Length: 344
Image 1 (cartoon, rainbow, N blue to C red):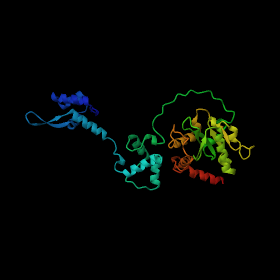
Image 2 (image 1 turned 60 degrees about the vertical axis):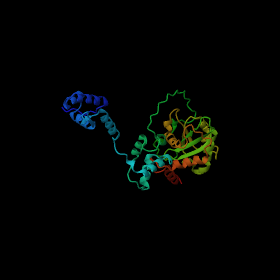
Image 3 (image 1 turned 135 degrees about the vertical axis):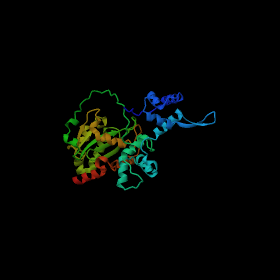
Image 4 (image 1 turned 180 degrees about the vertical axis):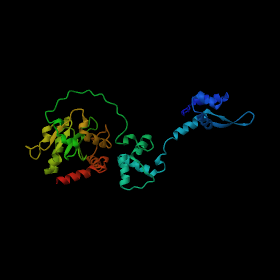
C-alpha cells in the first residue's frame, strides 16, 4: 500500500541530513522518516546546494536549513492571487466607500453594478470581507457594520420584573410580527456618556425600516414633546402612520398617559404603546439593528451633548437613503414614501 504524503519539519530534515552522511539509501530513509519515497526525492531537490570540498572540487549536497527556508516561503505563497493586487483604483473606491461613506461590502458591490462603474476586475462582497480580515485593505474591522468577532457572554443579574400596569407586548396584535402592515414603530434611546443630559430618541418603522432621530434632553417629558410635534406635523394622517409604538421599560418611557393622549384632542387616544419584557432587546429587533448604523457615526462612550442637530439630521437622512440588501437594495425612504402615497 502506498504511503500517504506527509510534510517534513526541521527536526526530520536534520535527521535526513545525518542519514545521508551515514550513507543510508533513499528507500531506507523513507522508512525511517515514515514518508513516501517521492517525498525524499522532492526534499533533496529542495535542499540541494553546491559546496567546495578541501580538494577544491564542487560537490552537490543537501542542506536542511535551505530546504526549511524554501518550504516556509512556499507556504506563504499558497492560496489564490489577490484580485486587488494591480487595481489600485478599485481598492481606493472600496476603502473610501466603507470608511468615509459608511457603506457595507454588499452596498459597495451593488453600487458598482448599479452605476456601471468600470474596473479591471469583478469582486464580490464576500471577497471584500475576506480582504478586510486579512489586512489587504486599509480598513479596520470596526469600520464594518457587522463584525465577525465573538462577543463574550455577559453574566447579568436579573432583577425581579414588575409588570407594567399599561399594555405589555403580550397584548400587542400578533399580526404586527409579520411586518406586512405599515405604521407599527419601535422607539428607543441611544445614550452617549452616562453623565450626558442629552440623548437620541429614535423611532423605527418595522416594515420599511424608516428612521426618525431626535436629539432631546433625557427624560419622559422630552419623549412626550417629540410625539406632540409629530402629531401636529402629520395632522389627520398621524393615526394612519403611527398605529402602534413598542418601547422598553426605560424611565424615559414611563409617562404612558402623556405618550398615548392626543395633544390636539385631550380626550382622544393618539397611539397604542406596548412595553417589551425586560432584558429582551430582540422584541425590538428593528431598533437594535438600526442602532448599529447610528453607532457608525456616534461611537459608544462618545458625548452627545456637543453634537449638533444638523449632524443628527444628516445621519437620519443617510440611514433613510442607505440601500438595503433586505429590500433588493431599495432605500427605506423610497418604501416609506410609497406607503404615504397609498394612505393619501
